[in-house]
Image 1 (tube, one colour):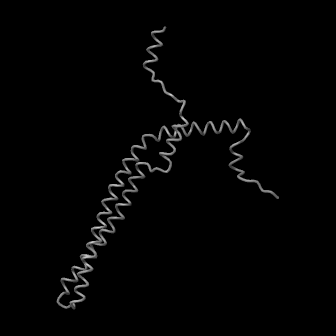
Image 2: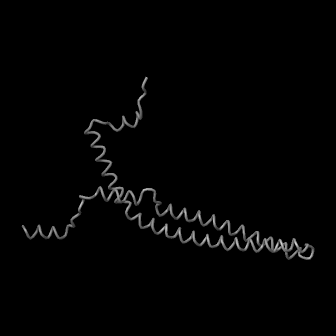
Image 3: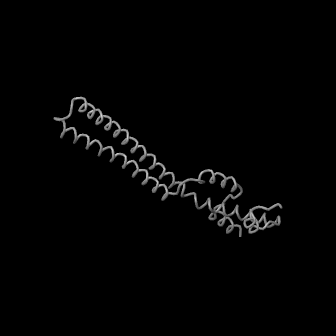
Amino acid sequence: MSKVSTQQEITTPIVDESSWKQELEQLDRLLTGRLTEPEAKEYANTELAKHDGVVHTIEKQIARAEQVLTEQSAFLPRTEKKSLENRIESLQWDLGVARKKREQSILKCGAGIKAAKDADKLRARWQQLRRRQQGLDEARGVARGRKRELSVSMPHRFVG
């Protein structure tokens, strides 16, 4: 008999549930408000589209300004030609900044997706512990004579 019980002890892992409240608190801090992996991917796609739009707009402005400069350079006064060249230079600077911001956003969103993927591994346990806590809260409420449906349907009293 003792041989069977020792085999059972070895094959059955011991799960320490004594600190589940602390685990729930840690998971609450970690996962509350955090995006899931699909949400993080959707956010990343939105951010990428936003940055791509800015880059494409600046590229179109540069192309148009360069086209005007090459087609109309013979007819433009020297001051306006210089102003147009300065505008192209400014737009190229803006394009470089926009591309850097785009790359930073890609890196940030990639890290966010990876973090969301890692956090999603903990969500099942978090939900399990939240259900446990809700069950305990409901049991305490019933034990104290509070009914949940009344507290929901009657949020406040009217004093008259």
